[in-house]
Length: 328
Image 1: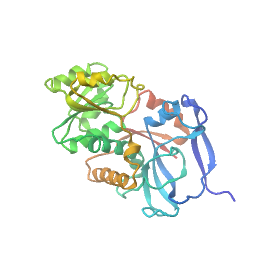
Image 2: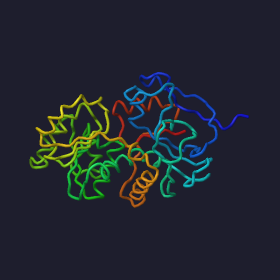
Image 3: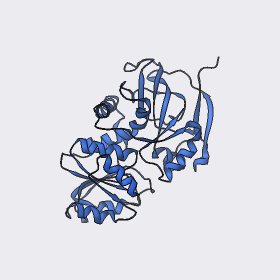
């Protein structure tokens, strides 16, 4: 007897958006420690692009997608925090969220409050949990500190702008157009720099009276890395957490000493949420900020699941603002 079916996005080879294919497959039943979730919405992120292109190589063929939200259909043994019928959302390994329904490990799937829509849930988990670890778990940040945040008008960036404002942290954002800069300012950035028309390093120095910032949060990678180091004050922290422009070249650690005993880290969300209790706590903190109105999730692009290649092209071309979701 054939069980429930799903459409799922897969790649058979690494490459461009043309490598994305939609297949139909049986979903199956959850085993111990697993759940089956039927998606109402799926989030799209740069990690999907990295995995598709081969920057983050995967065993092929592979399914794509790292975050989603929907209804729990079934739970396996040893799952106590979720039950059939529950609303839920997640950002989790293994990839495979770009589908109608899936079976997956339950540990990083989180109960979704009724006050948060499925669309917002799908658009916020990977991005919002990333902002959580950037501001709360990577280096100590206090009210009054100053942060430089690249791509401040993107899905992660707009959440970061609001998170910083809610905690009294001054955020200087960069973006690639005046319209995107205005969007960052609207969402809580104290200052916004159009990196296409201004030297962001010089402008940051000007805005900080030559002192530099406490922390740089950089998901752009190759194009901004050197300039970002020059934005830091002595003993400042450089957090490199993405590669939208390509991977950062090998670093001469002596440069960190020469520029003021700087600190450098390359974290991953999935290390931070690997522990079930920690993941659930981080999600609860994120949900609390959304329910309280401190953070509003902005979804500016919606694509049906079968137009996933079109969605990838828009994201790679930096034609998007806020979050992008796929609709099963």
